[in-house]
Image 1 (spheres, rainbow, N blue to C red):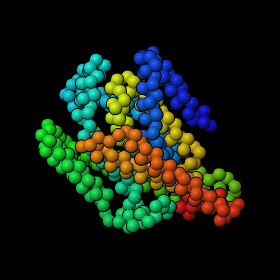
Image 2 (image 1 turned 30 degrees about the vertical axis):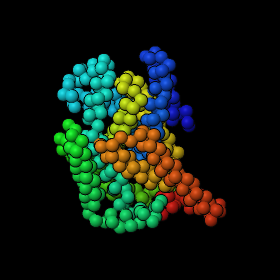
Image 3 (image 1 turned 135 degrees about the vertical axis):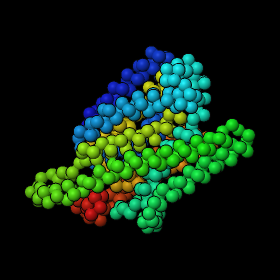
Image 4 (image 1 turned 90 degrees about the horizontal axis):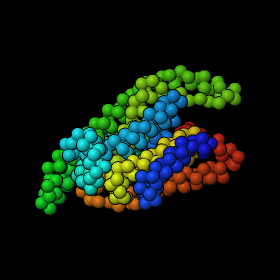
Length: 381
């Protein structure tokens, strides 16, 4: 199972490391290896959230996510995206931007650094909306009940997530502009850019997430109709098969996944410049890491890990909230990549351990029927 799921990741790792040695020797090998680990550590929460969405899609769209989706993730976000940033911020043509990335790496890195405020605002707002919509939703299973119960009550207020997100964005933009002006910097005019980029991130979330949610809701009637058939199959001892998203619903869910992956990749791409400004090594290292994130997503889906460890999604969404805060803070201040990666790992690790303790408690209380009870609770029964 492990080889089947991670086989392509192992193959890409071998090819990527060999390519690094041929390109720049053992030093390049070390840089690519470090970047791969950086990407995996920063994106583990991405895999957990992706798995929660991917398990709703049918086999065809899961394959699309792993084929076309991986091309977008590896080549689009890890290779093309940094070049596009430079082309837009420096008002260069695509060919000129690529030439700059290969011949004048220091200037290329400077352009990307200058564009960071707008990138962080867009990604930060998109991720913040994901976090806010999660914590304001009333769920049957709660990890931090003392916090999630009152937040679920607040979530009944219409458009609360959007209002909070806009307030956070306004504070971020005003703080950035004020600090830049006080230090006599040239970035005071970029406060407007931060504001516009953040609004663009918010709009992107509402459009893509809204459309995917709309078509997902349209399938509820179909699920209702099939409910009787599922109950009959269960009584007869046959495996119960849930309705999987297909057609327009799956398409917009796929778009949502790709935008989500793009938002997660921002911090990885920006953080990679702390290690190297060589676009080739960056693409190799981040590309290898992205492959493992995709493979881990599939593994979580196929193993039913999210059903067994019910707090993992909570931990991942809290990690998303932390990452959103980090991105918005980095508009003005620099934060070490180790801190960024550690926050997500700690939160997901804590949610995993809480899930293990919960499962043990259920098993101890119910004896041999603990497994069945656990399945019912994790399904919200």
